[in-house]
Length: 319
Image 1 (cartoon, rainbow, N blue to C red):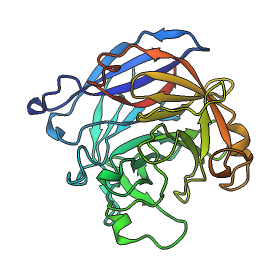
Image 2 (image 1 turned 60 degrees about the vertical axis):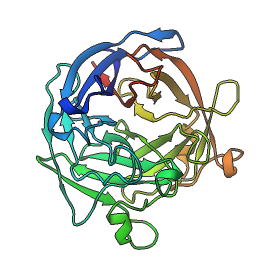
Image 3 (image 1 turned 90 degrees about the horizontal axis):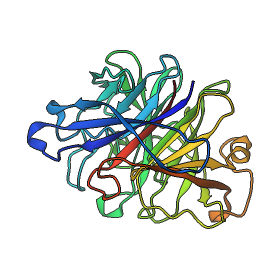
Image 4 (image 1 turned 90 degrees about the vertical axis):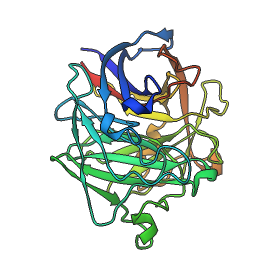
């Protein structure tokens, strides 16, 4: 058995007139720093019928089936683009590749907020964190959504903290959290399946690279856990992120940048041990805690470094 990462790219030919062809790649997760990583293409998701809303940015591994599912972002380009009317969930995009598409129904008037997405499963649902990092496109922040794993499933906003949910939050024009995040990892090795982290490798949201504790019951994000390099400097990426826990042996937390960079994140354990959503140590941004991100290597994905194709979704499978 070994740990493999999966990622999915944007439209591989850049031609919207023929729909979108989204290539899925698989690669070995390194045990330590080691340079370049060679991926293998396992299949292509063809979503011609959803050409304008088919960027599958959120990838998660179902702990019951062991298969990978993906969920699309809420909006595609620009502040004037309508909120995506369809939530697309594509299952089984890992190896063996056998994609099947479902479109969940909505709870009431819930519509997703944001332009970027991260996703992961616990044992009862697929969770999607959806956010906007760019002030030019509207309010900066994020919201958490729960998608049941039935067919077609139901998507609902998770917002059970603070003031009552507003109509704008339900309709996806305002976030429920003022912090932006677009990567999500749920810990399914420990009892309860409710421990989760979100990631932010963006600086254009007005702050640095960070993790957040996520309460899956309320949708609340904690104060930030600042990410720094092994040398103690602030991690300073400006890229969409992915995040995943390993599910074999001693637990590891792996971060992902859309260019194909793979990071191992350590030092978050003390923060997660803190009660509630408070942080366990002091000295980071705004008095919050620290975690360390160590570059393991770069996955050589087609057109990733040039930015022609972004690879935004990320998950890990034990195979």
